[in-house]
Length: 597
Image 1 (cartoon, rainbow, N blue to C red):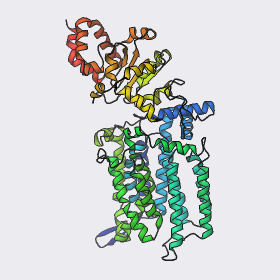
Image 2: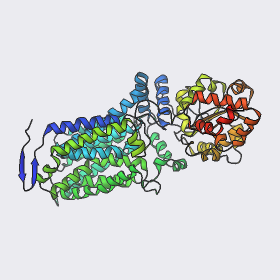
Image 3: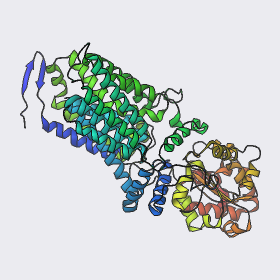
Image 4: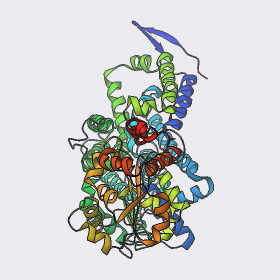
């Protein structure tokens, strides 16, 4: 262990690197990252249909090519091109439940961060500088950390960058590491369509090698040996092999045609992550602002490329900057692919402005390292209590394992299981954000729609009913729908949704009966004989979210003509959801009239 040495450089105290403080940064950041990547599944229905798909593949040893989960889209084309992830997560869940999924997410992200630390140290970037940027990087990707298959793309992006930088900048003679690229492609092409961006990365890399080999005749690059013609041919053949290996999946080239067709669907216009990061509605969001930081910070890579006569960072920045402006979901891809070069180029820029002794005096000081380490530790406590997310960042996230039942209708689905409602009912009309959880919770039952975004036709049929467009009642009959569920976690904060959607119809039509509700969800059954026992036992005639907000006349009628039933409904809600927001609102307004003559 090198001893700390102090020297005087004018008025600056100069410190050599002390690994003890670097270890302190490693440990405290690792603890911070462990908490940062451990949070409950919230409002992400995709997680569940991925699990249901994995279960189907494991049990049948077959990857479907038509829809198996929806009765409205039964036998329509569906290619689960992320089936590898689905199988992996289902197996993890089978052994360790939702906790295992959370641990898997943390392991994958730890691997990404570890790879980046290794690469940046190969470029001799100072540890303090590295960890400051890793901290920013963590919050820049916060929106895309749910346990879904894109996490594999982030890991494979990191591996691609690792292999390329090792071969290009540090070890030209050991080309065998390039043979790992086709192996990664084999797994990647069966786990996530981020493989297309990965192949774009490889093409950019190959073009940069070709340009450098040509450019050396005019102006020889610094620090990088241009490849010889045989080496270029070998690299070309390896990349061709990667493209061919992409076709090793259950549906070959049709997989990519199918995936591309999905990006052209009109319904994606309603999905936030498919909107431009320059959309006026998202310009002030934390994640988008951090994307801008990395986007405009990427300009330093142009400076670096110019000074080093290195085409790769320049082409990488230009290519992925254009790629990322298409949709918010691609901004994280840009940040991950460019992260190392943004950090390295900015550190290189500082190196050219300040002397080595000045830089080391700033970044090697133990005081800065200690302050940074204490800051990482300090953040753990507001993360555990969720105040960092909910109050400081105004960002909805709950630390812990499992499902966040405030945003996923766990209570309603438990009620459905206890009363065998999917067995009694025939066809469900479900909210878009519950279809995956439905097929996962009730194996073998089919939903109306889910977040797989199968086709625009299905989404239009769903929307026509949801928005009560003319003819929606006939659609309910024609589609054979006999029970319905709706999820809206923000109803207590934005009750107007109940008036503008199918909720208002189901809550007031004599043809439908409400048998369960809580602050975020509703369950109605059709008023037909097979549901009569459930209706007699569980119907809410007067008291529910909708009547409390918009139809107090119904409650008033109940208090005048059927007070005993209103009291019964109130007491049931006290038992089911004693701290409910709607219940407390109702209690404040009506409690005296309920229990006083």
